[in-house]
Image (cartoon, each protein chain N blue to C red):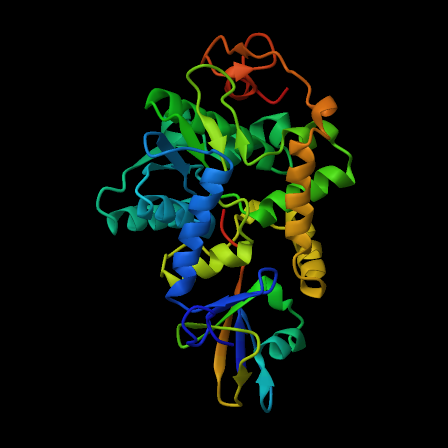
Length: 62
Length: 305
């Protein structure tokens, strides 16, 4: 699966739960929201190898 | 995970509430919770004129959106600080937001046009802003909000501060035992003087994660990047620490803040709440604790001394 966060991207092999994938790239699940095809995902969902998700930092703006 | 209301796929799971909601029911919950906070803290009513300070970020635009949905008389105030690469895109977000909502009016205070200098320029000139302009920025914003509210008869000033913002401030003040600041932190600050607006924070019970989810689900286009001057800010470091604690123990941030509000209400910080005598500034008339000019008016007189 491909994980994109700001100007960084990671490729992880195999299937994983959303929250496990976030931890694996060194981020805090509580501090990001996960979007796939424009939809928000909860942490328990399973991501497949071919999935691409975008992580949105919840801290942002002025 | 399923939505508690309709059993469809949930879009967000709020562990502290043990509540998961879908894309339809989450915005409904969010709007209703905002109304609850407004009522609980006696912030304002339908007859009040509310000025919402909008930065182009997620919290302030979400707040404006929710207040309009709830039918309040809510206008926006955007303060253009002239920060290169940041102020223009932020302003565009505000303009686009308003253009999409018939009747959403807003005022712009353009620092350069009205006072002759941008924030980086004035901060570079005065001692207060050396190194970091954040202190000067706060001073300018407070002054502009008070001025517009008074000139245009708004009796309530609303900001988009969320629970994470409030907790980060409280945490920082506790670390340094800034008892006077702790005593003054509240969801509602009464007007300093006759003719000035009271300040309210209707989102103070929402996690930052919750306001971000609302803007994403309702497709509010906001400025995602942090202000360039916020990089490395202590408040962001505190937020990071607090989020790590929250991850391990859901509800930690809410317990810390809501427990503080209860203690405050019970009078725990009364002794620290100093009564500061305020006078009108001799130039602008805004309340100031110093005799003569207020800190804002002194900024434009200062030449780096």
